[in-house]
Length: 203
Image (cartoon, rainbow, N blue to C red; front, top):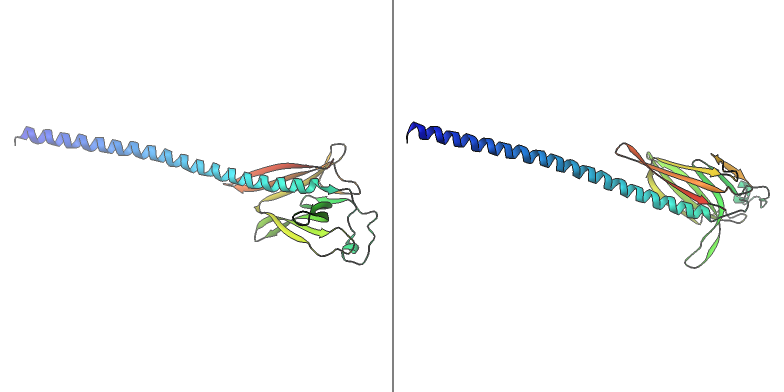
């Protein structure tokens, strides 16, 4: 083999190495972009799932609250069974964290009945949950018919109350029902809040 042959072969090897390195660099750039897109798609998918869960819970709450009746709540003494007088009691008591009212609720597969419904926020282990509690809407009906966790893992839950003039109140305690109740549920995802709003009409 002549010296010119050695030089030619070394040049070919060097070119092949440079081409291979270029191909690896291009593939790395493409894969980095693809993996970034996958992470973005994953975050979007997670957010869609969270929003769907929040929407389902807010819709359930709106339907439950919309079933409220303009009937006086039992006094605390009546719930304890020591007093049966409910005159002058509000039809709905509510604040930002929850509310209480009388509504028609299912009592089995084919029957409905009046219940005193309490929707309350409960925090345990750093997680916020919304609880729905049903009691018989009758004097002395202190026993709990059912207690259901509506949704867990919230970072915020807020109720506000719309009066007949369209004003929004942070709390309600009157013998008449509000025109509606606004519901806002929030859960943080990737350091960004995901919120869903719903409205329970009480017309």
